Each structure stands twice: as structure tokens, then as C-alpha cells.
Image (cartoon, rainbow, N blue to C red; front, side, top):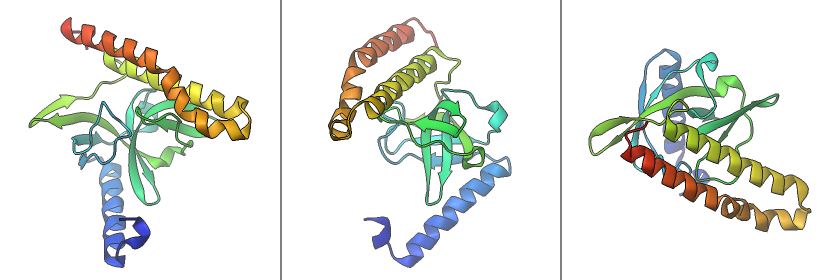
Length: 187
């Protein structure tokens, strides 16, 4: 059901829930949120439950999975860069990065995911897995952005998915590294 097709009471409820979540994080309380969508696959799956903790702008690092407040929704994506235009995030399963957001839009950091009733710490930039995933997200963003800037307009749209295809060998290599790291007990 599209947002415009929702009854007014549902839209009001969603706005109130969004405001309550942001207020709770701003007050220093953690939050438990259910993942919707596939933009962070394979790290976060639809239906996963994640723990989000408040975060200060000084405490975030490239590679962190952040909760970003947009006017009508919350978005969980990985931080890939800080530019003059703001903080730039990208879903691990997306070809293009998101538009930069101002610091106040960043309301929390995802710190754990619950699977099979157990909480697991999320891969962070300080872990092997986090470093590989962050590097891969940056590579895909660079390939997609390069295609957007250097190709003529009629060719941009059909080639955007090719950026993800071009990154496929890197993704497979990264997956193999993560499997080996897991077997060796590396974090």
C-alpha cells in the first residue's frame, strides 16, 4: 500500500511513532527496531530485530550502520563518507549512495542484531567483517558514481546496475575472506 493510499489515522500513527523513536534516542535511550526492506542484505534481513543506540556525531566512523531520520521514515544504511554537503550513507545491497544528510538527521547507530533469539554484535569498522563490508560499499559507490558522472545521460540508467556487476568479483572475494575469517575465529 502506498503512503498516499494510507488512511489519515495510519499516517498520523506513523508520524507519531517516528517522532517517538527519534525523541527516545535523543534522550539517550536505546531502541529496538524491526528491519523492513532489503537494502542492507546480507547483513540485515527483512524481519531482523536490531538494537539501536544513541550516537553523537563525534562518535561515528565510516562503516557504522546508522539510523537516519527522513521526513516520513527511518533508514538504516552504512556510513561511507563525510563530505562538505553532509554525511553520506549507502545500503550494502544498493548500487548508488544516498544523498548526503545533515548531522541532526543521524539519530542512532545499529549495534546488534537478534537472530534465533540471540543478540549478535554488529560488524563494525573495527572488525574484519566490518572493514571488508565498508570497503566493498565504498567501491560499489565509486563505480556507480563514476558511471553517473562520465557517461552520457541516455547510457547512465541502464549501466547503473552494471556497477554492481563490476563489483561482483570483489564481493565474491570479500565473501571468501569473511568465510575464512569466521573459520579462524577473527572478528
